[in-house]
Image (spheres, rainbow, N blue to C red):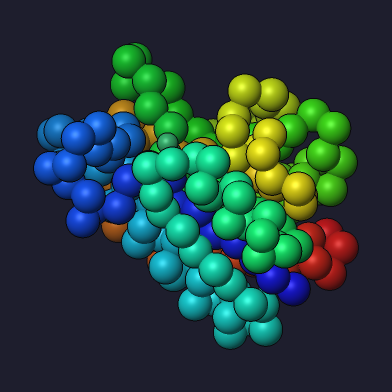
Length: 182
Ligand SMILES: [Zn+2]
């Protein structure tokens, strides 16, 4: 099983370049979405390799490069990892997004979302259909975008800062649940 991981937004080493996109930022806690996603993504990759998957991971500024790479590689599954954010810091919880006609993506989203909300004391916002996300539109395989938690919410942000390993294990378990038919 070939799993393509896409931690959201730009790599840290692109900082300072034009159009550098760290994603959502929690200034108070010094948390940057791209760094959280990269850390969780690396851990997910390790757990999936340990579970027997072949993993490729790419974090890059060009969304078309990401889905082209996943398609060219012949990925069986695609998982993008993000943090949510909202102007109102009360907004919180986990949601997992998929493309409406992607029935397998819906199953994968369900498996991952369930693992996360069963692991943490976190609001279950459920799985949601999205038509406007390039990584879901452009990929040929079942694809999901995991909004792990709200970086703008104080409680969720503590999870994102202190429990990256648990988050990664939950995402990896969701993938293996899907593979074994959760
Ligand atoms: Zn994001």
